[in-house]
Length: 164
Image 1 (cartoon, helix red, strand yellow):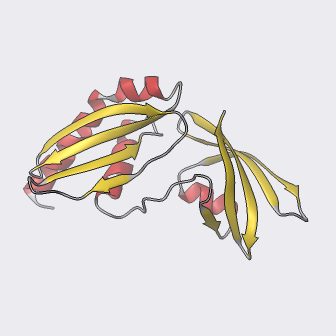
Image 2 (image 1 turned 120 degrees about the vertical axis):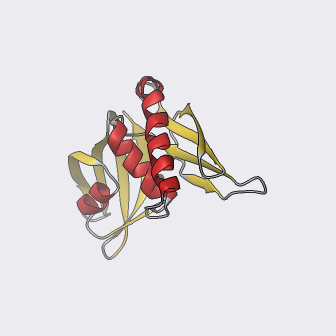
Protein backbone atom coordinates (compact mmCIF):
# COMPACT_ATOMS: atom_id res chain seq x y z
CA UNK A 1 0.00 0.00 0.00
CA UNK A 2 1.41 3.37 -1.01
CA UNK A 3 2.12 6.03 1.59
CA UNK A 4 -0.53 8.29 0.02
CA UNK A 5 -3.14 5.53 0.34
CA UNK A 6 -2.21 5.00 4.00
CA UNK A 7 -2.63 8.72 4.66
CA UNK A 8 -5.94 8.71 2.83
CA UNK A 9 -7.22 5.74 4.85
CA UNK A 10 -6.14 7.37 8.11
CA UNK A 11 -7.70 10.71 7.14
CA UNK A 12 -10.96 8.99 6.13
CA UNK A 13 -11.12 7.10 9.43
CA UNK A 14 -10.50 10.31 11.39
CA UNK A 15 -13.21 12.10 9.38
CA UNK A 16 -15.69 9.31 10.19
CA UNK A 17 -14.85 9.54 13.89
CA UNK A 18 -15.56 13.30 13.80
CA UNK A 19 -19.07 12.80 12.40
CA UNK A 20 -19.91 9.84 14.67
CA UNK A 21 -22.39 11.81 16.81
CA UNK A 22 -24.18 13.18 13.73
CA UNK A 23 -24.51 9.64 12.34
CA UNK A 24 -25.94 8.30 15.61
CA UNK A 25 -28.35 11.21 15.97
CA UNK A 26 -29.49 10.85 12.35
CA UNK A 27 -30.14 7.12 12.83
CA UNK A 28 -32.86 8.00 15.33
CA UNK A 29 -35.10 9.55 12.65
CA UNK A 30 -33.91 8.35 9.24
CA UNK A 31 -31.04 6.82 7.30
CA UNK A 32 -27.88 8.90 7.79
CA UNK A 33 -25.70 9.30 4.69
CA UNK A 34 -22.13 10.47 4.37
CA UNK A 35 -21.64 13.02 1.62
CA UNK A 36 -17.95 13.34 0.92
CA UNK A 37 -15.26 14.77 -1.29
CA UNK A 38 -11.69 13.61 -1.71
CA UNK A 39 -9.56 16.29 -3.35
CA UNK A 40 -6.25 15.47 -4.95
CA UNK A 41 -6.24 12.02 -3.35
CA UNK A 42 -5.45 13.45 0.09
CA UNK A 43 -7.81 16.14 1.36
CA UNK A 44 -11.11 14.77 2.71
CA UNK A 45 -14.30 16.58 3.57
CA UNK A 46 -17.38 14.76 4.87
CA UNK A 47 -20.81 15.75 6.12
CA UNK A 48 -23.89 13.86 7.27
CA UNK A 49 -27.38 14.28 5.94
CA UNK A 50 -30.41 12.16 6.78
CA UNK A 51 -32.80 10.72 4.23
CA UNK A 52 -36.16 9.45 5.41
CA UNK A 53 -36.26 6.14 3.56
CA UNK A 54 -33.67 5.92 0.80
CA UNK A 55 -30.24 4.35 0.70
CA UNK A 56 -27.98 5.94 -1.84
CA UNK A 57 -24.56 4.64 -2.82
CA UNK A 58 -23.01 6.86 -5.44
CA UNK A 59 -19.50 7.60 -6.63
CA UNK A 60 -18.99 10.59 -8.91
CA UNK A 61 -15.62 10.12 -10.63
CA UNK A 62 -13.01 12.85 -10.37
CA UNK A 63 -13.73 15.83 -12.57
CA UNK A 64 -11.31 18.38 -13.98
CA UNK A 65 -10.05 19.41 -10.55
CA UNK A 66 -9.43 15.77 -9.46
CA UNK A 67 -12.20 15.72 -6.83
CA UNK A 68 -13.92 12.41 -6.16
CA UNK A 69 -17.40 12.82 -4.68
CA UNK A 70 -19.46 10.13 -2.98
CA UNK A 71 -22.66 9.43 -1.07
CA UNK A 72 -22.78 6.43 1.25
CA UNK A 73 -25.43 5.25 3.76
CA UNK A 74 -24.04 5.30 7.29
CA UNK A 75 -26.34 2.53 8.47
CA UNK A 76 -23.72 1.12 10.85
CA UNK A 77 -22.79 3.31 13.83
CA UNK A 78 -19.57 1.42 14.58
CA UNK A 79 -16.72 3.64 13.29
CA UNK A 80 -14.43 0.80 12.22
CA UNK A 81 -17.14 -1.14 10.36
CA UNK A 82 -18.45 1.99 8.69
CA UNK A 83 -14.91 2.91 7.61
CA UNK A 84 -14.24 -0.57 6.19
CA UNK A 85 -17.57 -0.67 4.33
CA UNK A 86 -17.01 2.81 2.89
CA UNK A 87 -13.40 2.03 1.94
CA UNK A 88 -14.44 -1.16 0.11
CA UNK A 89 -17.10 0.85 -1.71
CA UNK A 90 -14.63 3.57 -2.72
CA UNK A 91 -12.16 0.94 -3.93
CA UNK A 92 -14.86 -0.62 -6.13
CA UNK A 93 -15.04 -3.86 -4.16
CA UNK A 94 -18.69 -3.41 -3.23
CA UNK A 95 -21.61 -3.03 -5.57
CA UNK A 96 -23.60 0.19 -5.47
CA UNK A 97 -26.97 -1.55 -5.37
CA UNK A 98 -28.79 -1.65 -2.07
CA UNK A 99 -31.97 -3.12 -0.69
CA UNK A 100 -34.88 -1.03 -1.99
CA UNK A 101 -38.13 -1.72 -3.85
CA UNK A 102 -37.49 -3.26 -7.25
CA UNK A 103 -34.13 -4.81 -6.35
CA UNK A 104 -33.80 -8.53 -7.11
CA UNK A 105 -32.36 -10.79 -4.44
CA UNK A 106 -30.89 -14.00 -5.84
CA UNK A 107 -30.27 -17.27 -4.05
CA UNK A 108 -31.18 -18.00 -0.46
CA UNK A 109 -32.93 -14.92 1.00
CA UNK A 110 -31.34 -15.25 4.43
CA UNK A 111 -27.83 -15.53 2.98
CA UNK A 112 -28.40 -12.66 0.55
CA UNK A 113 -29.64 -10.34 3.32
CA UNK A 114 -26.68 -11.27 5.53
CA UNK A 115 -24.25 -10.57 2.68
CA UNK A 116 -25.82 -7.10 2.44
CA UNK A 117 -24.99 -6.60 6.12
CA UNK A 118 -28.45 -7.16 7.60
CA UNK A 119 -29.32 -9.21 10.66
CA UNK A 120 -32.59 -11.14 10.31
CA UNK A 121 -34.82 -10.71 13.34
CA UNK A 122 -37.85 -12.61 12.01
CA UNK A 123 -38.93 -14.13 8.70
CA UNK A 124 -42.26 -15.57 7.54
CA UNK A 125 -43.44 -16.94 4.21
CA UNK A 126 -46.85 -15.25 4.17
CA UNK A 127 -48.43 -17.28 1.43
CA UNK A 128 -46.47 -20.18 0.01
CA UNK A 129 -48.65 -20.34 -3.13
CA UNK A 130 -48.19 -16.70 -4.11
CA UNK A 131 -44.56 -16.67 -3.03
CA UNK A 132 -44.48 -13.68 -0.66
CA UNK A 133 -41.94 -13.48 2.14
CA UNK A 134 -41.93 -10.92 4.91
CA UNK A 135 -38.98 -10.26 7.21
CA UNK A 136 -37.92 -7.91 9.95
CA UNK A 137 -34.27 -7.04 9.55
CA UNK A 138 -31.79 -4.63 11.07
CA UNK A 139 -28.52 -3.02 10.13
CA UNK A 140 -26.77 -1.27 12.96
CA UNK A 141 -29.46 0.47 15.04
CA UNK A 142 -31.88 0.74 12.10
CA UNK A 143 -34.75 -1.77 11.82
CA UNK A 144 -36.84 -2.50 8.73
CA UNK A 145 -39.80 -4.51 7.55
CA UNK A 146 -39.23 -5.95 4.08
CA UNK A 147 -41.71 -7.69 1.80
CA UNK A 148 -40.34 -9.82 -1.06
CA UNK A 149 -42.18 -11.54 -3.92
CA UNK A 150 -40.93 -14.66 -5.68
CA UNK A 151 -39.73 -13.69 -9.16
CA UNK A 152 -38.30 -17.00 -10.33
CA UNK A 153 -36.26 -19.96 -9.25
CA UNK A 154 -34.20 -18.78 -6.24
CA UNK A 155 -34.98 -15.15 -7.01
CA UNK A 156 -37.11 -12.59 -5.15
CA UNK A 157 -37.99 -8.95 -5.80
CA UNK A 158 -38.22 -6.42 -2.97
CA UNK A 159 -41.79 -5.12 -3.05
CA UNK A 160 -41.76 -2.93 0.05
CA UNK A 161 -39.17 -1.71 2.54
CA UNK A 162 -40.24 0.30 5.59
CA UNK A 163 -38.26 1.60 8.51
CA UNK A 164 -39.76 0.52 11.85
